[in-house]
Length: 247
Image (spheres, rainbow, N blue to C red):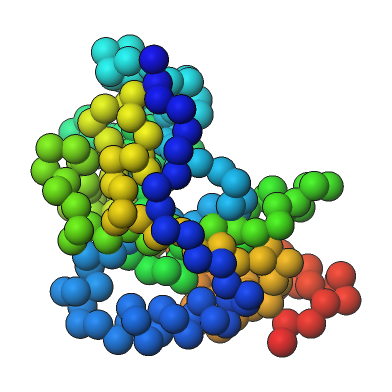
């Protein structure tokens, strides 16, 4: 039986995105590049959500054997349907197919993270759930310190540098993919004190997206496609329609 939900992360609530940005600039970007790579980030639109994989949400908690079988069937169907769009798809290894599919919506045992706290913030604030009648009150941005973990036996970690030749999105999004080896144990229970959760008011959505736009963190940049360009245009114009300031 899967264990009950429990959160072991350190939780920090910020009164504004500006304070979060200040913290990142002083305590994260102030480090050298090698030291920064010990940290990865993940943005989520609702601070009440658990950290779990898309495969877990898709299929529920399964034992390892069933989970592996479902992933294999998903991968097989993805390759079958995707060959017309990516002629080299069959030549990729299983993990490469899984991760490429993950960036295009395929349920996967891998959870996607990024080396950039601001890219994580982008995904937290652009999520469509903010447009629903009952939007979240706070987003969450998780920071995971890989340097504090004994990850060899508990986590599988793939960085975009291993994938960028066939997955341009992974490169643009500075992606790091992480999977736990035991699906019956929650992710935050595995990583324990290495995880920090920042909570930021969701009401700042438009000012945050404007600030990220000024940094070059946009859909057009992260997806490098006409879809991304269209979403960037829509996100830029919508605040004006709502009579909201970008400042």
